Image (cartoon, rainbow, N blue to C red; front, side, top):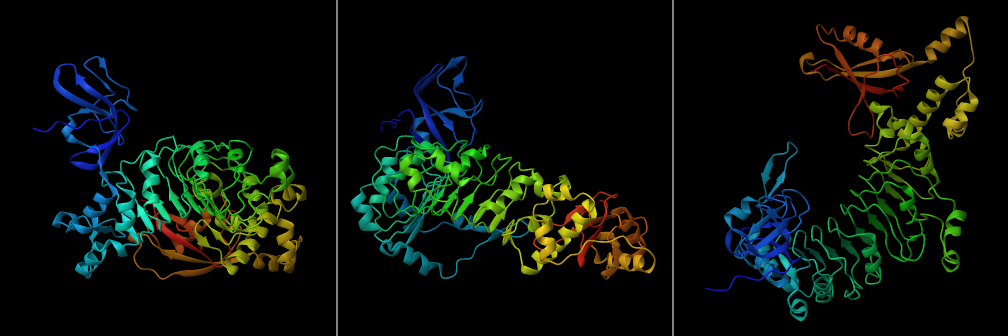
Amino acid sequence: MSEPPEFRIGQRVHSAADSRRIGTVKYSGPVEGYSGKWVGVDWDNGDGKHDGSLNGVRYFHSKSEKSASFVRPHNLSAGITLLQALEIRYKSISTKEEEDEMYVFSASNRRVSVQLLGKDKIQDKLSRFEELAGASLSYLGVSSSGPPCQISVTVPNLKELDLTGNLLSDWKEVGAICEGLPALVALNLTHNLMAHDIMRLPQLRNIRVLVLNNTGIKWMQVEMLKCSLPAIEELHLMGNNLNAITPPSSDTVQGFDSLRILNLEDNCIADWNEILKLCQLKSLEQLHLNKNSINHLWYPEYDTVNDQLSCESAENSYRPFQNLHCLLLGGNNIEDLASVDSLNSFPHLKDIRLSENQIADPSKGGLPRFVLIARLAQVKVLNGSEVSCRERKDSEIRYVRLVMSKLHDRPEEIMRLHPRFLELKEFHGIEDEKPSTGAAGLQKMASGLISITLKCVGASMGEKPPLTKKLPAATTVGKLKILCESFFKLKSVKPVLFLEEEGSPLPTLLDDDMATLIDVGVGNESTILVDEES
């Protein structure tokens, strides 16, 4: 009978029965009351039985109360080499069960089996490793490289490698894999819990894309990686609980001269000052900050940035975020107008995401899409939807008229709250409304009419053709509901109204009966959906 495998503390392992059940060895030895040897594992998914103590005896500490368990050594795997994983994934014949697991989700969230046309030809091509340009080895238990010279002979043309969810933790093994793959330009290490020691990593001169999502990495390790990644263009650091950017010898991050895309989504960054430390990355074009905790942002003064730099760095400084054209801020805590207006100061910013922030949610007192477009002078893409020339023109005119209707007799307030108002008013040739009476008053009232299209979408309303009506812009939402009951002859149905806007993925609920149409962003040629209370 063979000896059970030995496991060291800190080693990454997976269940022998399930390569997706991954954890870290925290203890190896006897357990009081049970015979033989046991391995204490802290499971990544938190699905264990205890916290490292059993029957009153503390063996180790786990990350949560129920994330640990004791396992017999033969029920664990310490992993396989990269070459073994390639053999398993690309040279073995797929089983009926594996083919059944090949599916995509339909629009209705149902599994749809994938049929592989010419599967035999594809399998034959993939089995010839020298032709393989991309490999996906996710959740196969890869823990080491194997002989680097053998890797380079086996897959000499591999350019993209996905190692998501494996057992890698030692950067030495990552370096060996990259050295053995001279053509490799993109490496995905998502869900590998990487060690904090990066001292033995060689120069990875060809790596352009590195994905380190959910690897436990901190910015200190990112700085250590910098010297080994002279050509890096994309760096993905999602889900690492990052809350600070910590440059080693300056107030701003230096180097990364080729970095175009930096993904910091789904972290814990709350202070915008941390993000400003990235402002001297001269090639940075896209900065992804969705799902953090940012509540306020601003554009830094160039002189202020220079003051914070050392003399040598200041001589080589650049305008802050000089090439940034995409800034994704969805799912943060932004709620102030100043943060929105500050985005106009970024010199080349065209693509902005503000969805899932209070400031961009009309149902929580935030700004409708047309106001955001009007306030953001340069934006070409907002919340993932292109802003057409027509939408910009309509949005800016609606915005000016909205401000005029609210603050026509308070010019100081207009200048403070709406910095683009005068510019837009002059650009579109919109004149101030003058008090008038008699026939002129009737003309003014007529000019205040807006054309809107009403569409019934309620299940019990039946098929009714859309109606286009001209109504005063001062009509309230409550009044429009009453009119809809009359227009569509709705009996025993309480209408609910939604504003459908170009570029918005979902219609906006109009739930304030006292607000006027212009208050809620309804403009000329708007479409309103008439639904029913559920």
